[in-house]
Length: 422
Image (cartoon, rainbow, N blue to C red; front, top):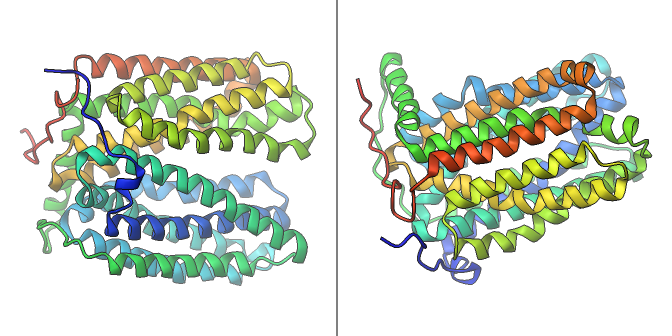
């Protein structure tokens, strides 16, 4: 059996799929709105409180639903019509984000926290449904290219949305346009979903008991531990987030306190990684024609780890910018390959549960890493934490490669069945 995958179609052929174009367009519009909303929330919380604790509280509350509700959302994505589930999620979020318009004073921050938690909860149901439905729309050979395009579009539209929100907030000192546009983007995305013609697959529907629901959650989790492909994805992504989570917290202290960079350079630093991520969207499409996604994951993790580790030794801002650009080059193909493996290594009836369970476990590792960041920085120093995090992420790449060993195109990629052992 040849280990080299067959040639995969390019973007032009991919975009000939009408239903994929609608899904991609809806998500692009939603990503633009999310970019505006996210920046507006950060600036609003800072303006009302000036507290990093308030910012961290909002971040944790918006991450918790992926842990608390992720497995249940996966069950629903495998039980009900995924297209309707996405449309209803967009409808609910379109109304929910309007709740941010009620926040004008520090004593109203609880409204922002509540709306943020509810919006994140609904998004937790949207994500596994979308990941599974994309595999319903396209043949397996086109998924890596499709995921690469989606990743690139998300980065670009988020960036444009943040720029638009920054311009409006900076010029007029008002927040309602950002929340209004985000609401509108959800309604437009819902419209795109309803225009999709592809029929939903015949999934198990109907009401079940909580015991049966738990059994379905358990079945989805067990599939991960029975599959070397999925264990490679889990081990690589979870170990990587143990390193990356701390870096996300300590990056600003590294720049401001260790390198003594002026705050005005923070946008340029963000732009460096974003440029690499955008450029690598095209690279990912080329890799799809030559490399199996398992190789992309392993090498991507090692590349990101090397880049992060070297930042701990960097003495000048120019080197940090170059390393961030390098890391960005690896991130988009890495994320696209992880999504592709999750979609292709799982049976149709399990895609939602497996995707949600993986997301829950990786998010847990990310939150644990963020929680340890301050302690590690006080103990080892910020630079040493960067070096340690880089080693952890690079090791994640080698662990994933070991778990993926011998898995060429078509090997080990047979979709796992929905029969749970025991």
